[in-house]
Image (cartoon, rainbow, N blue to C red; front, side, top):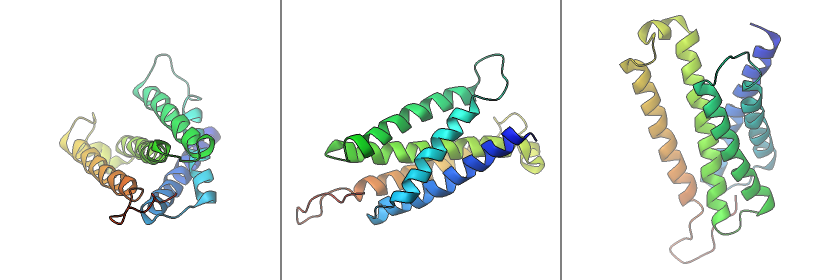
Amino acid sequence: MTTFTIVHVVISLIGILSGFVVVGGMIAGRRLERSTVVFLATTAATSITGFGFPFDHVLPSHVVGVISLAVLTAAILARYSWQLAGIWGSIYVVGAVVALYLNVFVLIVQAFRRIPVLAAMAPTQSEPPFLVAQLVVMALFIVLGIAAVRSRQPTRAGAASRVL
């Protein structure tokens, strides 16, 4: 494994771990400024460094990287330019959860490519174990996303939305 690959993987794992902290904070209605900066920066760096690997044609990972950067751009603008005002709060939450999901999606792809026992169970990544793993993770993120968006909703008493 090259130094570049190791740096890319470490950045990715920091992005994933900090992302779960940030999403947990969203659900709890807490602002986690430092964790948010780490999450957004490392997740963007993960996507950007993903383009640094040699390739001769566009790969699915490049498509995921472009989507992730677009989602992150919207989330960063919603958070820092529009200060989560109005709909921008929900755009930020959805963008952050989707960006984290995409990072985890790629982690699962790489795990099924690089970990021998997983690669043996799904050598082409079209076998049931791979599909089940991805569907379970997608379902988890849908639940997390719904919980995070709902945490921003007004209470029954009509109070203002929580600020993340």
